[in-house]
Amino acid sequence: MERTLRRCVEASGATLLHMHLHDLNPTGGVTGVAVLKESHIAIHSWPESGYAALDIFMSGSADPARAIPVLREAFETEEVRVTTQLRGSAPKADGGQKKAKAKRKPAEAVARPRAIRKAKVAA
Image 1 (cartoon, helix red, strand yellow):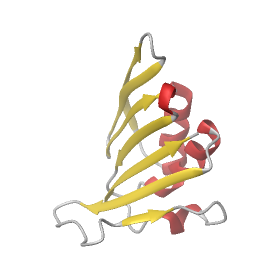
Image 2 (cartoon, rainbow, N blue to C red):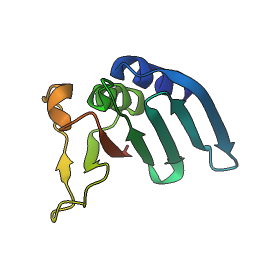
Image 3 (cartoon, rainbow, N blue to C red):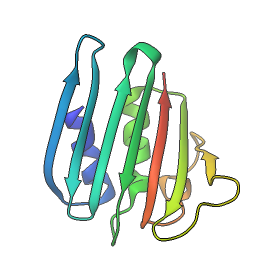
Image 4 (tube, one colour):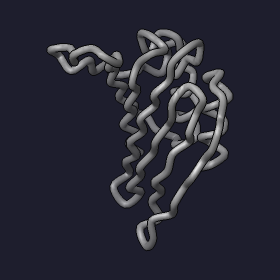
């Protein structure tokens, strides 16, 4: 998980300040956070359910959309759900949910770098 989060930080052009991960025994899940100069990436996983939730918050020139292909590869998943919420603005009426398609380029998966990213990863 640490390697995957580091790859996400690198791919998005963010700056890692600190990382803390905690194994959740006996389930084998992980909870943790990568603290970034641009904000953070948080993860909570439930391997017994084939589910992981990630919150990717970034600002400045960092592009969180570039982390999506890294996560898709690392989790070997077919389904990724991305919800976008701009900071300081109300949620969209439709919840802002878009299903990321495998053929999309990373820049098309999300709208702006100053957004909250949530990826539901199901195995």
